[in-house]
Image 1: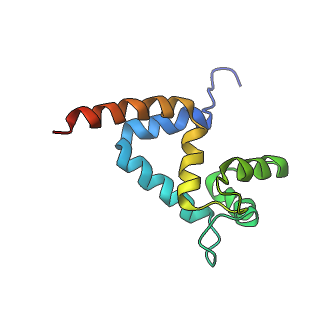
Image 2: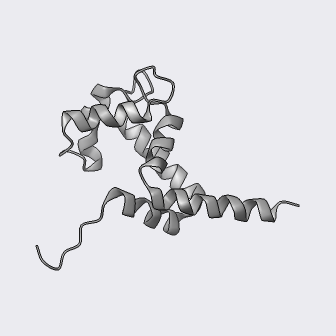
Amino acid sequence: MAGKRFIDFEDLLPMIANKLGGEGLIDELCNGFQLLMDKDKEVITLDSLKNNSVVLGLKDLKEDEVVSMMREGDIDGDGVLTQMEFCVLMFRMSPKLMEQCWFWLQDALHQQP
């Protein structure tokens, strides 16, 4: 497919952040969490991630990739992802976004009285 450029997730998140700003990006991540979570447990489980990932265009994820994603994001080791763990995972998956966040933090600190 010459001429077409596929955008990786790590490229997409900074673009969204530039367009929506920091607060808008967090809102979108929270919306993504809502789509992926188990509605009864209000967390992302391995099953809810596998079952709902198609909604976000992640239908091609392999079982080991889903398991790996859950392990990487599960900060407290309880086997599920809370909204905070999910957002942290999304930031960690995007090195460019982490770099931008540092600049946003520095800017916010300089604006403090």
